[in-house]
Image (cartoon, rainbow, N blue to C red):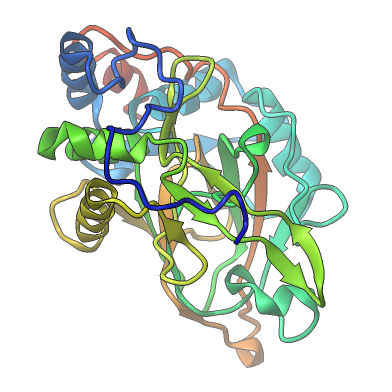
Length: 329
């Protein structure tokens, strides 16, 4: 068995993956958490429309457009941007990312040479083996959950050039809200999900060659900027969970949250020229149907980054509506 695969543990509570004791996300910091929770709930959007930002030119964001995108991401770790006309020019997407402080692209297995993926239905070749390149539903996940700790995806941009003839809507959930709801339910669930061996992904082996090694790490962690990071997949296959009772309870609770009606989940089907920029929020995708005969074939561009969106690193500590006030448009 791979040494990175978690073994059964029945004894001491898990470590919290290097989370600083003064972080509001540390399970033992009750006062800090209450302050953060108050600020988070005060700023939280109630409708996805609150997060929509028109963008005149992705190559040159205005100061107001940049402020609004960042403000929305401070509130909910995501924003919906609308361009005037759809374009398959990847340089426009890269330029948009650069203005948000996103520079280091994740050159994943199926990405194009420029590091940006063109997501469409593929019927043959390497891409056809991966669900994002099919019309099948995608289950809840954060991007790059299988990446090594030093290659975690902190942000991504998804841009619609051409929607499907039918279906293909996304569901989106701010990981900070998932953390908040889980901690309110039971702080020990959070502690279990912060264990450094909470979730493992076996190696990806093709034709006897390891093209991606096994990856083990926490679900919730705190990055060097002090912000919360989430690594998760709801897949039943190829995900190995730490074998202890608290981890099992926590992951089943999270699965129920994502499949239920109580979480603040936003649904949105991107139209031509629309996109999502996010600090790697939880998301899923409905299945869809293309209609090539009518000239309708879904095409989205996706860029994944190792940085968070610049200007969204500060964890709010005080209650208020400052994020909300700057994001309404």
